[in-house]
Image: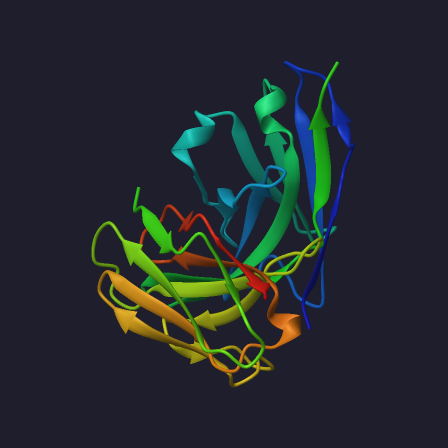
Length: 123
Length: 107
């Protein structure tokens, strides 16, 4: 079964770039049955979708990130990554990667999720 | 964006009670609505997809219904392990949105 694991620095300085990686095991990021998303959750708050990458590397992003996010994939390592530029304290959150099961002519549901990685933006 | 509004924001119920959570969409989303359970300190877990299909391994006391703009998650016979926050999510639009969550506690 597919498993996901996030990795990356837990502390990023304001105005710098946050870079996280999600390692996928038990499945391939090139599998057209899934897309690959990043979702975040500020402490005590709800879930915020950041964006997704398709198996063909096409991407969609939440407009709320105002163009600061880039999601990319590495087939050789079976990983996908999130780059979030010009971070502020408002980007402090628990960041999850998740597989989105796609269905014909529609999007689907997130399963499974990684365990999450906490990123704090502070000087 | 499609806005999802959950009600109530929190609830407290006794073991064995039937609990109902509502998710209302700002426009019709057909049956493209999914439910997740998030236990404290854990990642969200898929419960129901396509408004009413129970994910494999999820106890049958969980059920979902609805279509269009109104949806319901029902937990019949609430158990202590059901404590957590429940989120709805729409998969109708390319831009994913979640409800704000409903926190479920045991009396």
